[in-house]
Image (tube, rainbow, N blue to C red):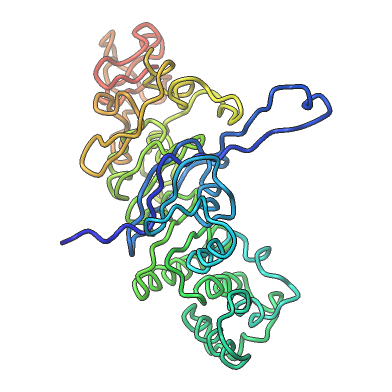
Length: 386
């Protein structure tokens, strides 16, 4: 089966924000927040690419760049072959007709003074679509119906305060779809909603993707939600994509140490399940003072000397699986289904390690007394430091 055509091709995308604070900053060297620092990826027609990572990693900024709500510092964003980073005036307005964004908070993204009709029809007015009020009303009604607000006549002239949280987000989706866009960025569209209505919104987005073949970028901090929604997942850390692969490959075979730690933090709905937590050491580095070499090396359990000297490229380790790590083929990360050892014989001294006592486990898996682990400092097989 032939691959779908590429809709968006992002190459070495960079966005820095200048930091200026206080009178003294007038004489100090200019400093920058490295919000997005050289990311590259493609999005194909009908594909959903998920972006996950902790707060401040650059997910939302990447989405805002792709919709040109922010202007890139450098790099290319090729939309159907056209670099949108250089568009201005009428060309930029025409591009924005083709690309839409669904924002995180439906309580903030809807104007409380606008009726639902005014909100959904505003893009039509801005872009001069629809020759009459009645025509725009019909188009707004069709968009509401696509967003499963039925019958649309009951919602057209309501105000946001007369809607539930789920209904507000459906209005936001209808507003994004009324122009029939060719690409949509969904920035944490269900994080502000009750768990009981999240599935309905996610299934609606999947249905619309199937009906209109629209590619999505789905931004979230929730790995389980992103897995459900996405064909591929990109894991971001300090403005970099550190791992990019098909969703199930990311979940079942994480190859970057940060992805390993991120997945270990996902709760399992089974009180009897043993789930080993991978602890990340240290604090998140400042996006202003980026560490040399690999950005993750100060917190990495597998770091070596090379990691603090040279930044690794995002490279294809296995077909379709890209990792930003010097030692991705050599280290053995913990998988979500790996066994958690609670007792056994110490891999150093051979004496029993009793259940409930202080111990350390590597990913082989082997168990160690804490004192023995501090002596050997790490496992030579899985390359994990203790």
